[in-house]
Figure 1 (cartoon, rainbow, N blue to C red):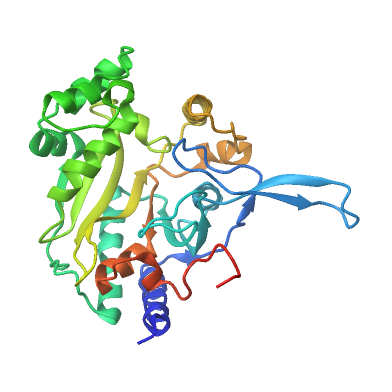
Figure 2 (cartoon, one colour):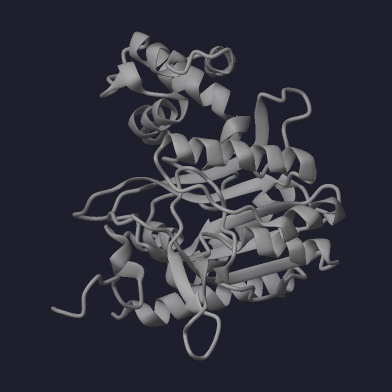
Length: 343
C-alpha cells in the first residue's frame, strides 16, 4: 500500500488534534536572514536576487526549525500556535535523516512543559489511531520520566553533574574520561569534548536502555545543550528541556531507539539569550563552521513572551517510522529524498 494515504491521514490527525486544543495554524517564512545558531546543526544557504536584473543579492538561509518565528508570533499575542511543514538541515543523510523533513512545532504562551508533554502524547496517539501501531509500545501507558543525571548514573555509571562542573572549570575532557573509567569505549576519547562525549554515551549506552515497553522522557538537560531553554530554578547547571524516545523494531530491518521530539520551557531574557548565541557562534568557529547572524527581531520579541512559555518540535517522519515499523525514513516519505535527477 502506498504511504501517501496513511501519511495524509497522519497529517490530518495532527492538525485536528491541535485545532481541538485551541491552537491556531500559521506558516512563517522558510527563507530567513538569520537561522538558528546550534553548533551541531548546519543550515542550508540560498543566494536570493533582490532585484529584477540580478545585480543585487542577499544571502538567506532555509529554516532548520520555525522556532524563532513562532515565538515571535506568541509574543505578538497569539497564545497557542503551530506550524506543520518542511525544514532543512545540511549534511543529514542516514536511514533516519534526510536534509528536508517534516516537523510539527507548537507553542503555548502561557504553558508548561507538562502541558506540552500532554499535547505530545495526544498527538502520537491520534496518529496511531489512524495509521496503527506496530511499535509494540503501550502508547496508553504514562511514559517513563528520567532526568539526564539519573539516566547517566543508572545506565552508564557516570556522575553527569560532576562532569558538568569539571567542564565549566576548564577540563574539556572530563566527561570522556569518566565514560572511559566506567568501561565505555569511546573512539578518540583523548581529544573528545563534552558534547561529543555526551552524544557518544547517549548513543552507545543510554538510548539502547530506554523506551522498550513504553515511551521514555529524558528531561533536565545540561544547560549548555539547551541554548533556547530556561535554566532550572533549583539547579542552573541544567535547563528545562525534554526529549521523548521509543524503541523501534521493524520486522526484518534495522531498529533502535528513535528520538521523537525536543521540547523547551522557553528562555525569555534577551540579554542571556544574546550571550548564549555568542557562545554558540564561538563553538561554531572552533568547529570550523561559519559564524551566523543573530536574529535581532527575535531577541526584541523575547520580553513579550508570556511567563511561562513552552514549546515542542515533533519529527513527523520519525513518529511514522515508529508506528509503521519502517526501517528507513524513505519508507514513510511521499517520495524518497534524491540528490540527482539521474536514476
